Length: 331
Image (tube, rainbow, N blue to C red; front, side):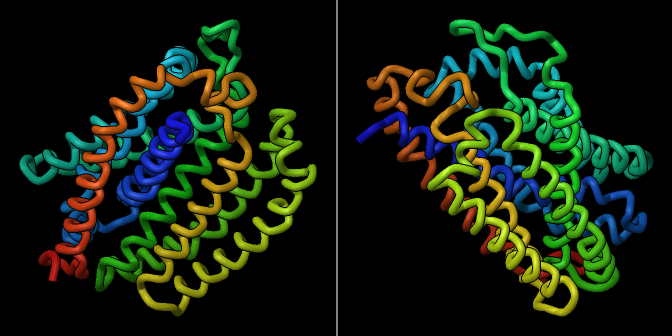
């Protein structure tokens, strides 16, 4: 068993779980100004209140796992992306504080609502910029970052930042379609129908630009056998997008969210095809960045215990709060 591959899969799984599970939380925060002040905003909050805090467990697992299992990658990525990563953490902290204080400080609730929206928007935009900066390449000299402070700030990274903001907003709207009733449910359908085409357009723009950032990206997608994926991925994406659109317009309440998750899954698969087996695209692969095998084996024991526990309590919380939310709460 190649423990390096095992740990790469664990970290990729943790990141994917975070994107999926915290994505709709952030999306609802981004959409928050579009909800009516009062019961509609409270209803949107109640739709994520039981699960939002636990969703960030996956971010901790992904970041901590990267530091422990691939220390070289962590040592290069962190100084290269200090600014967007710090902005992301500040956004998540401010979002969490605003989430709690809006209930306990009604006199200043409009400010906490603004903080909840601003923190969600900042965190989502910073995550997208981080992804874009990683994809466009990090300048490495030997075993250290050799670029400048502002290398992460490019038109492509801004495009990926905007794309992720819209994608999270679409995911949040589809979650509210599934989990709410009444006026908020109708508003969420309108938001989802408006956001889905923008989501698809921005994703297409990022996908078309990515192969020209690095030579290996172009080879993976436009040379055999990667050409197969170049033909199949657009077909799968279009079919999933049609399913999402049908669900938003006239399908069951669960269909828009599940189909939007399918779009996220296809995007993550495409990302994996582009960069695998590198952890820093075009610079450092997973074996070069890996910790010693004994360290990986020691940590794997803990992961083998903790990951099933996290999955179990996450599944249980979603099962307990599986109903819809009206103006009074879950039922």
